[in-house]
Image (cartoon, rainbow, N blue to C red; front, side, top):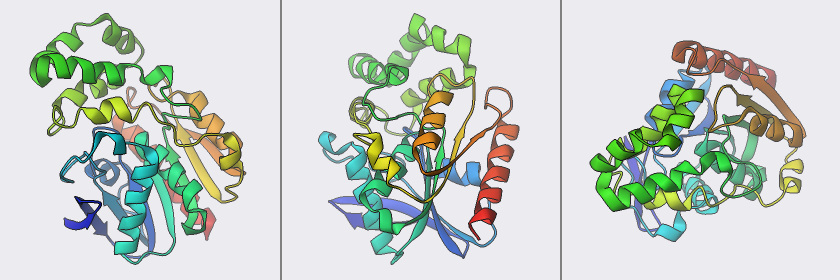
Length: 267
């Protein structure tokens, strides 16, 4: 584990293995362990994983108004400068996919290829599928993390999600249990209220190899969102994999296989 200073915040990151740099960003409320578990080891590729601001071991939290995709992309650019990395394969899951897409729009010359895993945003802020995230922040602010979780587990809103995907329901509950969840609750209000792009035209200019991965059932990451990204990316390739609710192992192994095949196609 290493750290570097940027914008008054100490960012935590890891550089693993050797080869072509591949940066993969985690989802909302998670940390750098998530991409390590999801992607596995990739022969010939240097994995770069990091804790976004307000996540993992990156501290302090920083201002609420900087929980947005442009700031996260700029944080990531600062990390690449710190590591003296000129060009990367960029990817991420859920929130990390949105950060990666924003980075690609802002810094297209630094991107060799793009990997978007289970995107949760398209071209509009606050998609209906994420409406429970700010609600979690409100409950946490009123009742604290422990009591808030008890109330949330009993809510009809969560039960609706649970009927579609027990995995999604549990992931929402984990927002109460992640490290320093209460202190970092602003991320749950601010990040869903942003979008990685303002218009699909921004994406249609990204003429780079792109892998977009979706699954269903997954009410927080609709399959249509993944298909939309693949459609608008000029070299977008859409892949559907087994959902986590069916088998976490098959979900991860399938993603790793398609990721490996995608990397082979780049060479």
